[in-house]
Length: 150
Image (tube, rainbow, N blue to C red; front, side, top):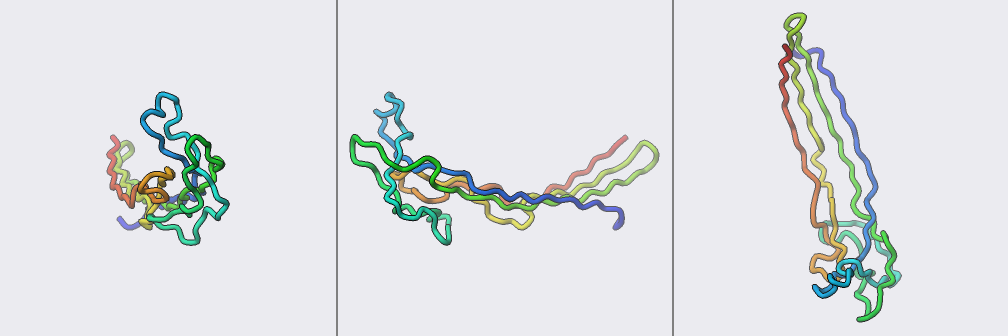
């Protein structure tokens, strides 16, 4: 029972998805096709912070709401979003009963080290959660699978 197990795994490392600082418009802007597409003003301060947290993922003071009737000057994709680093492992054992029958046992674990993976950040300047992480990816998950072949 202790021998002939197969171990496999994979690691996922990815840089963050870029985001754009935007202005959430009023309901009347929907008919003009502008709601959520207006860019913020960028004042030239550094956008990244040395230690991003879920409450302050980037420097929110680098962006502001443009004056009424003007467009913001913030470029597209200037905010680098959260990256990903995850390790997945699998353990498999195949037991053969005779020529045609067998049992396969698998233990599958995703995000083995249970690392918090930030997923989305709020980039609307006039939102109360501007600059905060608004969602996370799934935490560790372990599955136990049995397959009987006949």
